[in-house]
Length: 180
Image (cartoon, rainbow, N blue to C red):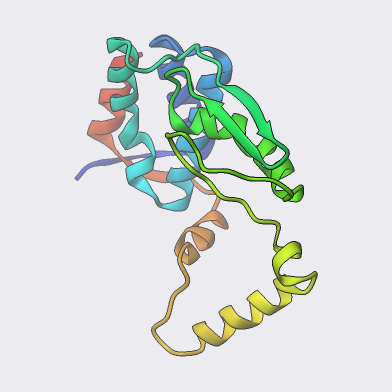
């Protein structure tokens, strides 16, 4: 497989140019491009540039609304609902997570969702006290000392330390360039 070396900024710019050229507004293109760049940085290639042609296909077919705006509704003090309005999930989550974090701090009310994606956020101080991070770190260290144990995400976190260029499939890069 032939590759081309792209910096993380070049990956972001390629993705954003392609998304804008195919119907995304600047905000949506920026959110998705940041996700694509971070996936490539982390070594999660199936969530990086690899997905861009499928995003473009969805934009062209009208299944994805590249200019849509998710609507965040507070159902109760601790339940929020985000109407996606045919936006891609990363855009919906980008709008919903800040409200979800606020709701997790006020845990006085709740209820089942009426459909869609369900995300539960729990403020660890409420369930484990203020010492939860120390306890978790000690537990993870014990797990890692067992030999062949690796924590989920550990490889991604290591990859994040490397901010240098990434080797990307040249055929994929050429296909993406042809879409914009």
